[in-house]
Length: 234
Length: 404
Ligand SMILES: Nc1ncnc2c1ncn2[C@@H]1O[C@H](COP(=O)(O)OP(=O)(O)O)[C@@H](O)[C@H]1O
Ligand SMILES: [Mg+2]
Image (tube, rainbow over all chains, first blue to last red; front, side, top):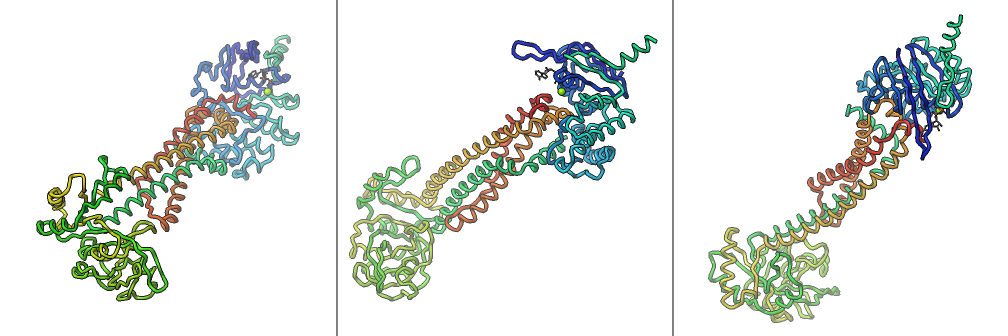
């Protein structure tokens, strides 16, 4: 199993009250799976993504990545883990302003201590892969929203991570660009990438091969379990 | 790794040139003023040393009273004035010392000062009269460019002859050749024997160049000069200075009290002046150094604002695998680089400034001042860069990514 969450909770305290953003979640994600995460606003989708991607630490529970318990990793180990094993795609793209597509994509390689020539070579390769081989030196301001998100996806791929986490990747895009991004993610999935994607749009969630739904910090439905239940019933 | 982070830091600096320049401004001003002000101080010092060297190094001065205080600085003005107005030095002392110590002294002169209204044609000018003996030209290395000095007979006979400093010659005679012309001093005719070479000195104020040199006897008989204000001796060689000082003291103590006179040489006077100027330079440098610290605080403030502005960027970098140490290093290097670049620009400003100042005032930039200013500005960047860099390193990636 690629990623396992065992009885994971994440609490936030606001003054005297405690918010259970994640409430005793258990989940397994297999290699090559494309998982979509749905649920109403405030149900804990983003929190789940942050905890599963090693950006935030859980309050309770265990996180096991590629068979290793990484729950108690310190900040430096987490940084290395994110750098090597995780790719991020954000709703707001989060590209460095006034910085070329090439430099944006190369950034994870800088922190991976790769040589400059490797950085350039790998970044070019990834931009080619997302169809922006002719836009290497454009800055975000010179690119459309869809193109910016493709740069972000190239950046997420550049260190060849085990899992790509995407939080509302089409949320800031018009339907045409959104469709392009969906196609790109499907294509990555077909090539064997593991993807976990938060979305509130049914049609976007449909491109994944597994859907889970959150409510009040809990998973209230998981398409994989339904299927297996159904098959058990047969 | 450090190379990659330096590259990131340089990219960040280049990305926001206006902000970078504003951050550097304090350091530019700080380094510029430190280097420029110390340049003026040291320039003044070497200028004065040169002036003294031009006057000769084996010269001894005897003046009434004690112009040097115990600590080496000039003593209480009022006291010095009272003492110098008492006529203590006599021409006879000079003659006796020279006669009794031929093996030590080459020559010597007594000097006195008066004022008179000088007139040539329609030009009049209030001039300082410097009463000297013919040996003055040798003792003080002061030669004529045209004409000649007065001789021993002219001096002892109190002849009405003068030698002009180049400035006063120019002012009174303009393009006319003054030699053998009649000059009126307080209405009486004097013959100009010679014009002196330029000595320079004292920034446009009165100087040796603007004096009218008259025979000492003439000064006493024709003008209201009443006392001799110095005896100047030329010692045969520099290593006789100590013996010469002792000889003068022995002779004078036969008639005078210990406190009535002082004997000093150029080095002593120069040391005193250098001490004062050194303190002045250090003081000016110190004041300017405060502006460097202010510049450092400027860097800190703008970097702190910049960390807040760049919160999302920092969050992103952390999400992508930057450790707190890498973020810390990037911001520290940014601050240090800004400070170093600011220091370099400040140096350029100081060099340009000194070139301009040189036209009016002696100023030189020393390597020492450059290195000090540069070292201090780099240190300032590093020290004041710590707080913003730590703030950046501590940001939580989720909070930072959420930040709008
Ligand atoms: N940093 C935080 N501090 C306090 N409460 C938070 C924080 N982050 C999220 N929450 C709360 O946790 C709950 C889940 O939030 P989130 O995971 O962002 O939901 P979603 O992404 O599904 O909209 C919400 O009630 C939210 O207000
Ligand atoms: Mg959310």
